[in-house]
Length: 115
Image (cartoon, rainbow, N blue to C red; front, side, top):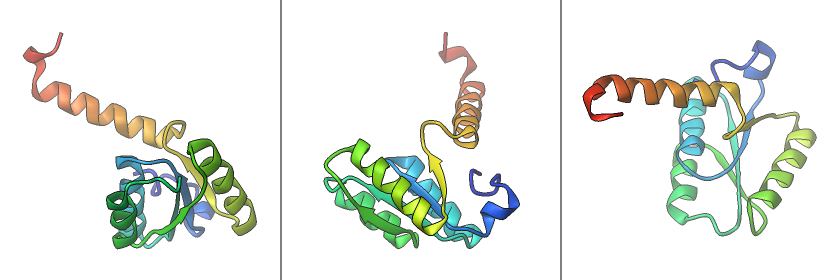
């Protein structure tokens, strides 16, 4: 779990995320489970289902910008101002490890169907 692997000082801080997709929802869910406030930053065009799902999981959702680059810039601004830990869905070691673990488990369930 990405939030569980944060250094101790970061666990007491809220987490900050930008991007769309399952990683964002997982982070909001982990925050809820671990009692760590999560803020997710998405472009203004983000699908309503993703926005409402993150809100239902207790995350603060910030809609900003027309694309991911603008959302990322805003996420960093919020992170600096509010002293939040920034977790990138494509460049965070814990998330990369989690994706690798998921792939390994999937592959081991169906070893003969993969090359």
